[in-house]
Length: 298
Image (cartoon, rainbow, N blue to C red; front, side, top):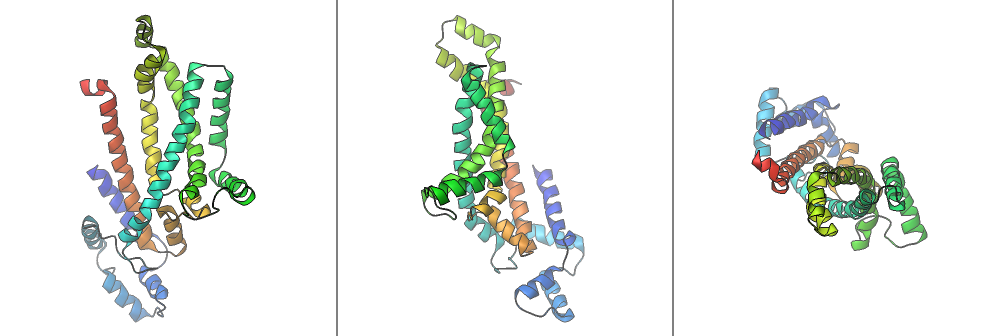
């Protein structure tokens, strides 16, 4: 993890030097100050941007290790504070999205594997195809039009009570469900053909115990890895969905920072999301260790 995070920190730091525009000039314009040459130089000196690049990186890395991501150009508030204030909204949306994906994918995936060629199997495959084919922004607009404007069942935008999370969570969850249906179906079909499943049935073990205890536990391991990747992406802020639904999460905050050319915020956002991805991948690996005894035996 340490080499990966150090490499990510180098790339994140390079954002400040690779993006167009002078950060000092952007800060002065945001504060309503005319960016004269003297003012730009003074601001660059105050920010430490007039020193060697490697020293700038070391100073920046030292501040990051002390949880200081800098100050936003737009609000002059600490970036980490701004991100943490919006993280609970993104975490809530991510949790509801994962729940929606599981509620859609698990019964359809398991039913398709247990009854191949049946009506349930065809329904599951059609749902999977529709899920991976439908763009998230288009589904968002359809749900807003029918669920909020026409039927008036849900709030149109923003975070107003528990009902406001349903439309964005379903949008994200349905978008993820398709691939999980396919994963669960194919994995479970493969596991059901194993000898230990035949042995369990031959011993007279109840079918629901055979499926739930032996087959499904092993069949879900590939989906678990994919779920970890998707959770990391959701916690990184589902930029399009959060923007369409005006959800006050970190994805929407990142979009606002991009339009405002607030490079400090973008820099902090990219670094925080990279750390989250690395940590969740570590957690998935450890969870595999707990669920699969064969890994511990090796």
